[in-house]
Image 1 (cartoon, helix red, strand yellow):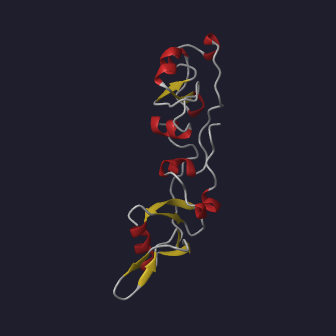
Image 2 (cartoon, one colour):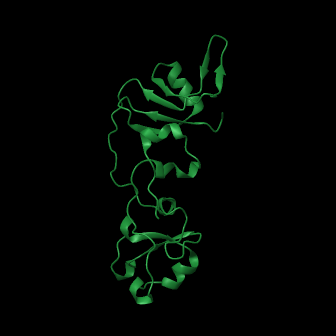
Image 3 (cartoon, helix red, strand yellow):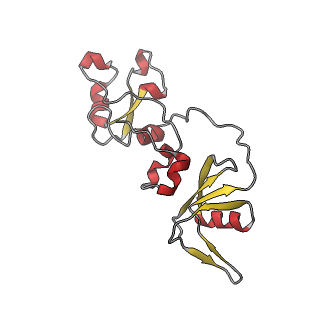
Length: 173
């Protein structure tokens, strides 16, 4: 149960975050959230006076205003590697660094549409050149990730009960 994750929804069924199973049960016991879905074989937490199943999805009983929700997620090395599934944009091998498609030294910007994951070998080979100068092409068109699931991709297999609420993660085909 220590590794169980629970999807927390706002009162409007908008996904907010992932919680630990323990925090989810506390929210239910305090009447701050209600269970939307649970696995058929969900573990049950027992106390002297009650038993509570560990939920898979919770919904807050009162609406929580989210003050700022960025339409474009912040750009970071970790986020680019997650978006591109640690695959090099040039050879599709394992990527461990990022590369600017249009080099910054030649006017390229540090934005989602210009940054891709790359292996060290191809990053060094490309250097500060344009792709057409060396005859390379990208295997996909880089863009900002959409939806929520891409942020949670590191969790491995996502609970199928969550899909109606969070959708599917886009892939960097």
